[in-house]
Amino acid sequence: MWDYSFIIPDLIILYTFAIYYFVHTRLPIKINHSFLRILFVNFFTIIFDVFASLAIENADKTNSFVIRALNAIYFVLFFYRIFAFFIFTEDVLGIKRHGKSFVSIISCIFFAGFELFAFLNFRFDLIFSISDSGKYSPARFYNLIYVCAAFYIVFSFACIIFYHKKITRSALLALCSFNCSLLIGYIARFAFPM
Image (cartoon, rainbow, N blue to C red; front, side, top):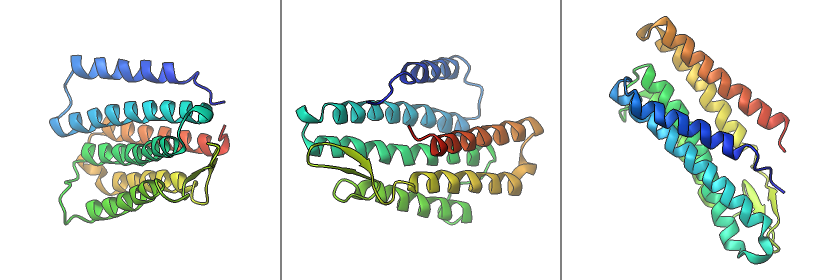
């Protein structure tokens, strides 16, 4: 059975950030949009995680396609959430997201590849598999979620190193702390998967 004990604190934290965001909109417009994107994507990722987990727990009453679809959507959102955190870093650094920039091209190519794997899981057992009885299990490419996180965190630090002169020291410290927190979170997820 999936542990739901973190859902309420997660949602309370998201709610607190959303209230703070709407009361104190002092961030520049582009960073505002990136922050709001993180809040919404994280909210929907949590919601689909809960629905997917409930479907798995009630596999005897749930169609296997529904279980597969909910989990595939969860992973689509999971990869998008990682990308959203990268876009936030990019926006704080003032990196322009236009089609011809190296950062934009590389980040979008990898994002498209990760999302493709998640979408293909609607049909093929790549990241996870669902048995006929509705049992969920990680599939051959499950660790792709860690590859995705590692790629975007390393790429974020590379961007921070390359563009750090464009931001204040406090913004630099905040970005480094933010990305270190993400790194610690994904290391913990990898080390303690249950």
